[in-house]
Image 1 (spheres, rainbow, N blue to C red):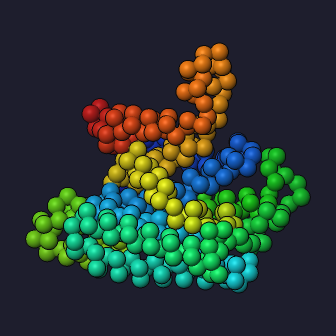
Image 2 (cartoon, one colour):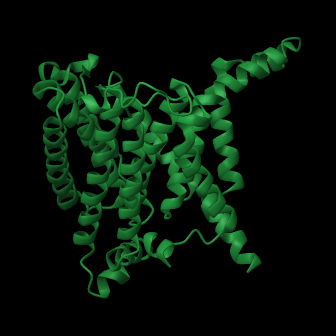
Image 3 (cartoon, rainbow, N blue to C red):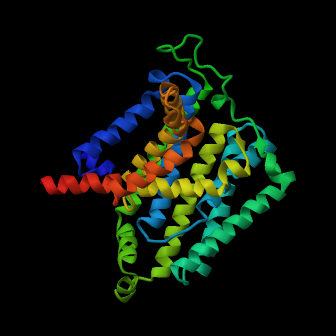
Length: 357
């Protein structure tokens, strides 16, 4: 009962999916102890950040049916908010609070304006408008070098509790140093869990049901008395605020932010792929999609290097498996996953569970 209330009644509805989600959570919690090394910790931290980011995008695309290319803009606003505040005010918690608050306020205003002025037009035109706004913001951030660091970005210090130099104990615990980096990682995990459960609560509330009704048939929802533009605008604002918080987490973890780190269009493409692979219209799909995509993105090159060395005596296969061609194989894996799981991994698993019931 408590578990069901915690998930807002939206249970995985598939044993395989439940096991997969528990394995992802356990893997994240145990990463510092089970997979020692900076790369594994960075990958796990990136998974936490992208679970929040992809879930916030699914709130907009999967639950409301709005296609927006401005999501990385709000992600970048969150990262720049923390980066600029800590750079100007020094490594204090006040600086973090001011940066997050300012970023949330800016995202709220921008998303409200974009929603009110653009959501009345057709979906394709709205997508084009958000793409133009996001591109303009990226150019704006790159040119304001005195404020944002320009193309070089900003490097800054975080509060002492989160800095690598801070130590809780001189003695390692299970072979792992209890330093500020470990605290920062578990802070990311905790914030990710809170934000994810909050989004799960939103999509399973009466407000979330209206969003899904608008996605299915906007004209019918309008005929039933729901002001679709208002609901879409609220969804746009909520999604932007969660993306902003994900950006703030990114900045706190990296202690750096630049245009390519948080505003790149490549990040937008990655978010789209994660949503499609995991399954649109289900936040669990965001968890599965973000985890699989980031693991493949970070370790596919290593696997291909091993395979290429193992096939060193077979010229054509060796060249095809060369680590530099990892993007080609990533694209093939994406096509195969869409072909095999047209409704996403979560959609497929739930359909199988329904068929067995």
